Structures are given as C-alpha cells and as structure tokens.
Length: 589
Picture 1 (cartoon, rainbow, N blue to C red):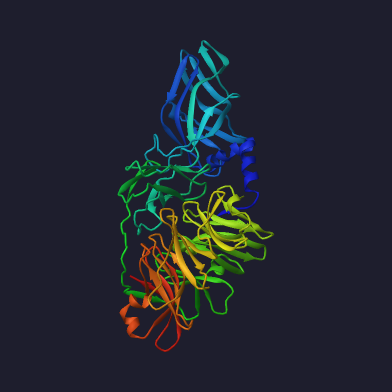
Picture 2 (cartoon, helix red, strand yellow):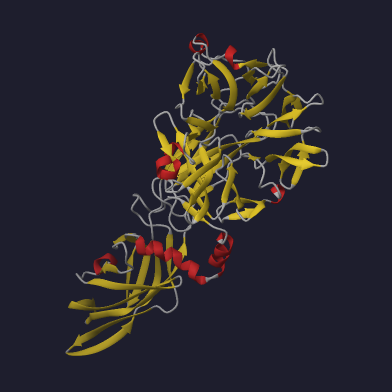
C-alpha cells in the first residue's frame, strides 16, 4: 500500500493534533475489529457483587454493537445483553434494554426482570510492542476502553414476600477495563537492506534495516522494539506507520567498526534476531567472471544492487526496470503517461516522477517488488533523488530553486540545498549531500551537511557520486584543460585518482560503499576511450579490459565507457563487440 503525501501534509497533521475528532480515529479500529477483550469488570447490585476477569467477547466487524452473555459475569441466566454502540469524538457509548425471559433470582426473595442503561467508555490508543494477556493473533489490543462519566445502569425486579413488591435499583459499576480494536501485528521479519560488502570506516557510518509485520499496522502505527547486543551500535525503536507493513531503521556504526553484533527486534509478542557485520571488505583488484547482456534497444541509466538496471528503451519516452527475470514498463506499473527515474538507492529503491493527466507526482518504489507499485507518492511534486532510508528529495514544478525533503508528514524545505533544485544533487544515508555549484571562480564540487557547504577542490570541478559512508567522487579540470578524477573523504580530504596506463585524462562517474570507483579514460589524441576501475586506496586504476571476463576479451569486446558500480561490485558498461556493435553489459565478479 502506498502512502500519498502532498504539500498540505503538515497542516493536516497539526489539525489532527489539535482537534478532538482525531481521537475518534482509534474508534475506527474498534469498528473494524472483531472482538472486545474484557480485562476486568465488577458490578454491585442489591447487596451482591458480580465480577469477571479475562473474557474475549465476540464482535462482528463493521459495527460497534456487542452481545454480552450474562453467564460471562457469573450470572446463571441465558440472557444475552444486546448493547448498541455509537460514537462521539473519542467516547464510545453502549445502550441496552433487555427484559429477561425468566426472572433471575438474586436471593433474599429478590428477582431481576429487566436490565437497562448506558455505558460510556473513553477510547485511548495503546502504544507498545508487547502482546499482553493475549495468546493468539486475533486478540484486540490497540485501543483501551475506560469507563467515564455519564454511565448509568439500572435493574428492575421484585421482592416476593407474601406479596410482590416491584422495585428499580441502580447498578454500581465499580470496575471496567476493556481492550478493543485491531490485533497487534506480529513481527514477521527483520533484515538489512543496504549491502554489508564494505570495509570498516574511520568515520561513523550507518546501515539501513527494515522490519516487516505480519499485517498492516493499526491506527497510530505499530511499535517495533530494537536493541543491539553490541552497545556501541546504535539502534532506536521504530514505528511502522498506520496501514503499512514495513518500516526502516538506522544502525549507527561507530568509527572502525566491522562487527559482528546481533539486532534483537520484537513486536506483537514475537522476537526476531539478526546478525550484522561487515562481511566482505575487498581492497585488491578482482576479476569479473560473469555478465548480463542488456537488450539492444536499452539505453541504461541506473544500476541497482543485484544487477537490475533502469533503462530507456528505444522509441519510448518512459523508463523501464530491467531485472534478471523480466522487463517492467514503469508507466504501466504506475498507470502514468510517462515515468522519468531520477535516482536509485543502496536499499533497492527507485525514485522518479510519474506524469499523468493530473500533473507530476514524485514516487518511490522498491525494485524487488515493482509489481506492487509505489510505496510513497507525493502529488504535485517532481522527484530529484532519494537515499537508502527511502527519503526522497523533490521540487515543486513552479519553484525550480527550492529542494524539499519528504518525511512522514510531507515535503518540507531543505535549507542547505536552497537554489540547487535545477542542478544535480547527491544525497546519502547519513543525510549528507553533494552538488556542483557556481561560484565567482567557476563551477566547484561541494559537500553539504545541514546548512553548511564545503568546497572539495579549489579548481573547476563537479561532483559525480556520493556514497553512503560519506565519500565524494568528482572530476576536476586541470590547468592544461584535462579532466582528472578525485575522491574526497573526511579522513584524507581530496585525493587524485591515478589514470590507467596509456591515458592522459579521465572522468570518474560512480562510487560504491567500499570506495571502488569507475569511470572512463581518454587517450592523448582523444580518439581512444576505455572504461576503468580504481581501488579503494586510490593507488591503482586499471582498464576494465584487464579484469573483464576472459570469454568477452577473447571475443574482441572493447569496454569503452563505465556507467556505474554497485555495492555488490557489479559494473555497468558500454562496450563494442567483435563485430563493431554497441552493447551494454553488467559485469559480475
């Protein structure tokens, strides 16, 4: 199910906080629920006490009405109290008037013939991740019902001592606590979304995880409690939004951490564990042994972990997602006239803009579940890109300078990116950004944290990539007008990347979380181009032809342009085959 957001989101949320009508939302769950769980009830009438402990009272979905057997209160009668429910704000009112088919004997010559009255209960949302007093998933728990003022109950009856004397007595309700609404969703799974194929970092970094519930979260969402066995790894509890099944959380890794730790997650009485570590630190050159050939009509634009590619097919104005199993026309998936993808993330997200007859809408969808459509849909906005937490950056079509960050409420201005909506922005899981800005000295590559920006290279330069550990990749123009790639990190600052042997200039275009970079190098005469890959230590760059699959090099393939590298070490390249035809390949280790 997708979340639809618009620019009125903040105003709407404030209204929900400030108006009492918002409290009635939890009664929607009572209306939808199929049971009421009576935790404790105690009444006193005519000198007698009647009490009940835990009882699960059946209720039909789509109503507030409730049928309560008298025997549930320890009363030896077949009468069923039919309670008619109604709502006003956050108050649930039950009215009832039941005449007993057979008088119920109370003792001391007293008998009851009729029960009538009104019960008013305050509905309050219950938060938490446990599953109290409940041994099965059908047990309601997200709404607590507490008796409030206005409740009145009477019983009519008679005393039979020679003569019958009719009487009406009030019933004292001394305790009433019940739970209703929807069953608390059980935790189904917890997993890491971003690749753990990375080395330990000298700076604090993050991994992105995801929790999945067995069913959609009720009103107010569902809490999943999280804890790391290694206390140096920071995790916080996460709330799955209302009507959703999944939510993401950050695992904050300290500097120099490689693991392992165990993440413990619990919700709805179910516990799950997840072992987390940085499993694959690759720092030396490796050969590519396999490849995927893209359709001849595809013009690739983005590469995702696992080898899926976003591409524009020939004679089409809309992007498609090409996986190892199938090709999906995104305008058909999203029921739009045209779809333009603007970025992908290390979590497998695709960010873009869907254009319909109503105008543009920014979206986020997950490549692994593309048939399910958009997870986030922002009416009226155009997408710029997004990060591994699934957070999109968007712009308003009539305001090309302002960048908006989309959270649970809706779009809000990103002050640090003011004036950059028309250019190319990079945005990582740490919340950092990078871009190319115009200065009095010319174009400069900058890193942006919060509202502060920092020039990376004090010469004409541009940013071409930003990874999730904070490294920036770019290309500068040297004094002799040649292109020179560089990589910037907080520890080492800007470092020039070496050029592959036999080439005099190069442009780096993509950087993965391990620090591997790819790009395209050009010879002195400008007539020869070659795709290259650079090691994370920045000491070596080699042409991809030296590490490409042997079968391809023997067949005469020339790798002329590198387009992207994934966190799983796959490389998207443009090549020329032995017959001189242009092909696009995904090379795999």
